[in-house]
Length: 177
Figure 1 (tube, rainbow, N blue to C red):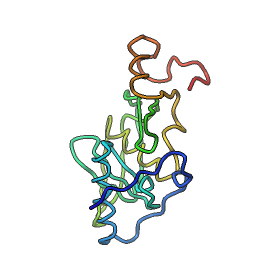
Figure 2 (spheres, rainbow, N blue to C red):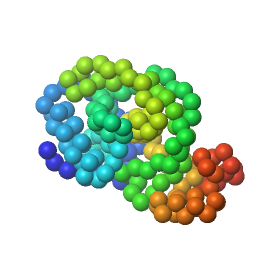
Figure 3 (cartoon, rainbow, N blue to C red):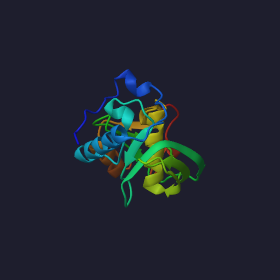
């Protein structure tokens, strides 16, 4: 296993659409192992293969109680509005922003052996699954953010001062980012 370099937001590779995985082999296993180690090293909740320079429809996440490997993921259905609005990304270091995500997602994906899994995620797991799925389609959270912050400290200062609405864009002025 190895720690891989994280591709940063200015790299056009992050805007490419990842290709489906057709071979569930040792190379895929090595990629997944490296991604897991890299995600934990940089303290992320998730990491898409494109973020380590691999154009495959693969991501790993540990946004809830367990670690998951998601290959060829699909969002089948969404419901509700997630109350967790603040979001960040290993490819956009030092920044965070408000993003609207669903509270519940019903998904399908494959594991490292190719076995199909159907699952329902809620809360932070749903947010993470959506965020990582977006990466596979060349979408960054900054594309969907209704307000951006230079760092968590700025966000916390504005929140504590009462300059921010409790949850996301409900009270933001049009065009406020």
